[in-house]
Image (cartoon, rainbow, N blue to C red):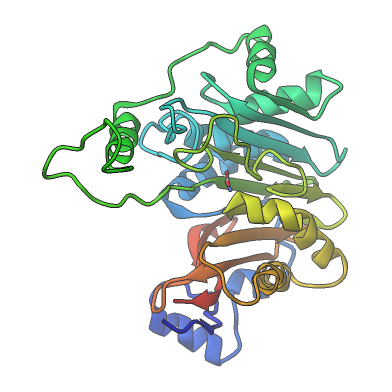
Length: 342
Ligand code: GLY
């Protein structure tokens, strides 16, 4: 099937309504706002994104810090057993063990913390915050990250829900007709590898900016695989002078291109958050000579509260990549731009 570059512009609500916005060159209402929008929180989207926004807004609307807001927002998603891509209930690695990655960054201090391959802790973003605030390091992984979290009073818990275990078992039983694991007769099919993640980015009343990226990573990964989410500059980057950006999708590609750092640098060099996200998607596509069979998505907010979102690849006819925004005008889902449709 031929792939074509498309520009699906900021479609809030129906495609028709979105097209109308596009044609009259009134891109996103959020992005077009002239006045400074502070405080504001944005996420990489979905039902979880709206819920994360609610929790973060609770903090921001009473004058709380962006750092506290993003942690509160991320925790809601991490603790939700129904969300199979983040925290408790996340899809496990190939051995059926949940391993979590998360990062946090403070735009004011430019300090950061992260954890990779963390087992048995439901809220890895809070563990990442402790790495940032209570250690002289930026990144802890595996056993060391777990020991550090336990030293700070985190409880070890089994993160594998029944739902996630069944998804893993179905994957394992359908892996190969030549191994010793058989699916039930009526349950033979291809399983896509889930790769969800959430970014929560906020600007508080005082103009301080913070962000979190948290995930259970690529479903059925090799134990020990760490994606982009806990790598500062890849899955997350924040700078008070400019804004914040976060990535979701195929982490290996985001790492190679230092994706979130590049989005922030693009904004520093004068691009809007929307242009900055699209530019990095296009770079990824260029590196693959226009042929990609994966997707990455970026969300960004600048220090004035303008937002943007773009993804590398998406289905033809589908709405663009969703992202959620909560500011004084309410909590809403918006749609960014897909660069390649298939
Ligand atoms: N972007 C999430 C991951 O690749 O782990």
